[in-house]
Length: 210
Ligand code: AP5
Ligand code: MG
Ligand code: ZN
Image (cartoon, rainbow, N blue to C red; front, top):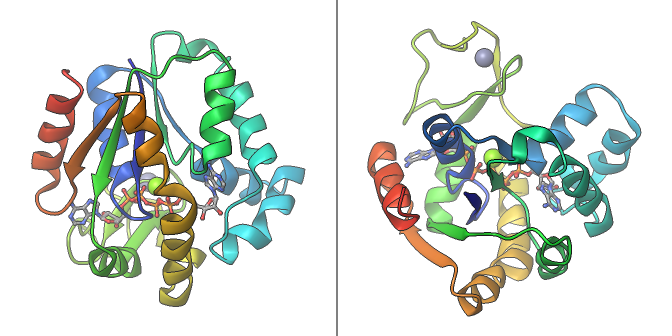
């Protein structure tokens, strides 16, 4: 199963990807996570991406397309994968099609802008393993500490309110048109993304027939 999770920043792509990849035993590929890891280890890619990311802008297409091209060639993608945060522009989707990789299904997680702002301002991320929490909706057992690995929970720089608004603008302008792109290919499934996380997983799995 080669699938794409679409949705605004904070729609819950990462949250659902983590649950589904565990269930279907296929890897999640998150361009956001790959770029953040590069930033942390101070690579060339990280340096190139930092200013865009911190401002809530997209990293240039050729950079992320290169990342995905390499990543999808790795052995663990043979039996399928979940793309979280890629593609994000029409040229990225076209590049993916041009790689000769067949995407079976696309799930778009629908969440309102107001809810997005509430979610992202409360999100906390484990510095060590990347697990996500929310101070109100999904708190860790011990405040400020990851349930899975006891790492410290921090706030992402681009989760401050002004930057979240910019990310939403970018989403509506550049990423939302992908819904039409995949609807035309007959692959788009829309799932309501507000409410119980387990229920959203159930609807997503039902949509993809898993
Ligand atoms: P990326 O890391 O992909 O960020 P994003 O799309 O802005 O997505 P988020 O991770 O914020 O949202 P999510 O949908 O994964 O939500 P989550 O599950 O965490 O990208 C960051 C940056 O990298 C971009 O801005 C860009 O600069 C660059 N980049 C990445 N990919 C790129 C590309 N392809 N091209 C160009 N540039 C690229 O959930 C959010 C919060 O809500 C959490 O706190 C969670 O606990 C909570 N939550 C989840 N579900 C629910 C629910 N049902 N009810 C209540 N709370 C919930
Ligand atoms: Mg994410
Ligand atoms: Zn952790």
